[in-house]
Structures are given as structure tokens and as C-alpha cells.
Image (cartoon, rainbow, N blue to C red; front, side, top):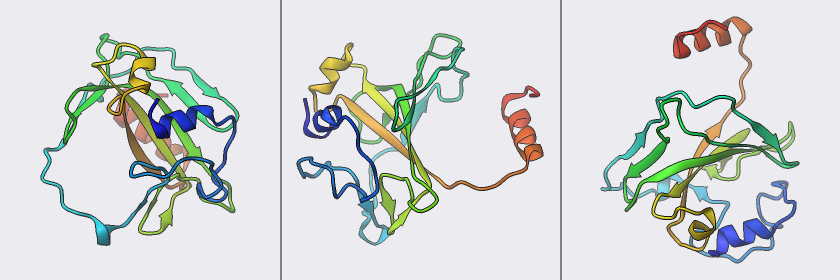
Length: 176
């Protein structure tokens, strides 16, 4: 099993109170958490990341699970049996979306795993994608190219119920 996922799988419970400083994992070039800074960013010449079937409704019912330290969901096929996936950029394969989970904090601590320009966010959504070259998750876990993770930073803001209703109606073409 690769270092990051292998150590992650062995952890029974962890938190972000010290932003990863209290985790007992090996350090390396692909280690979490990552402190991203625009000052050190290098413009990539890679092609754009391509989102496949991300615009399609997922099969119902969707099942969210609280495992004690995160809310997670296995990602089913879309209603037309296609699978959300990503490719392009520097990826050598197609990676199907298999799971999502959140990292969140408390009113005193920000919950994002990573930071951008020293800013931590209220929450962070991870969408886990598995390389389609590996039919089994166990095989993907043993491979350096088995998974890619799309991380989305989240800031919590207050909105009115009418704003949510308008957004849901516009984005789903259905009323609540």
C-alpha cells in the first residue's frame, strides 16, 4: 500500500486540531496537509482537467454515512448508468469518482485539511477518484497511480431559505 493511503487506512481516529502536526505518518513529497502558496505556484503547461458525466444526476437514493469523524458517501453511477470521472491534465488514465467526504472544523478551528496562502477554510470536500485500470479498490490502493483526489475548499455563509429555493430550482429544474 502506498505511504499516504496506507498510513491513513491504519489511523482509527484523528483530528485537525494541530493541522496534521500530531499525525504519526511518514513525511514525503505527496504528504498531507499541503500549504499551497500562490507565490510559489508554477504555471502548468498541462492540458485542462476534464470532467466526464459530472453534469448528470446520480442514481437515487444517495446514502450519506457519519463514521465518527467525517460525513462520507459512495458515489453511484448516474441515472443513465454512466460514471462521473476525470481525465486530462497530467493524468495518464481515466479516474472514476468513487467516494466523497468532508473535513470540517469548529467555531474555534478551521476544518480544511490544506491551506491556500496561509488561509484555512471552514471545510474541505474531497472527491476520491479511482484509476479505471484497477478494477478492485485493493489493487488501486497498492499502486502509486491508483487514486486522485479533487479537493474543494468551502466557506460557510448564511443564506436565506428563499435563496436556497431559487438556487435549487434553477440548478435542478425542479421545485422543492
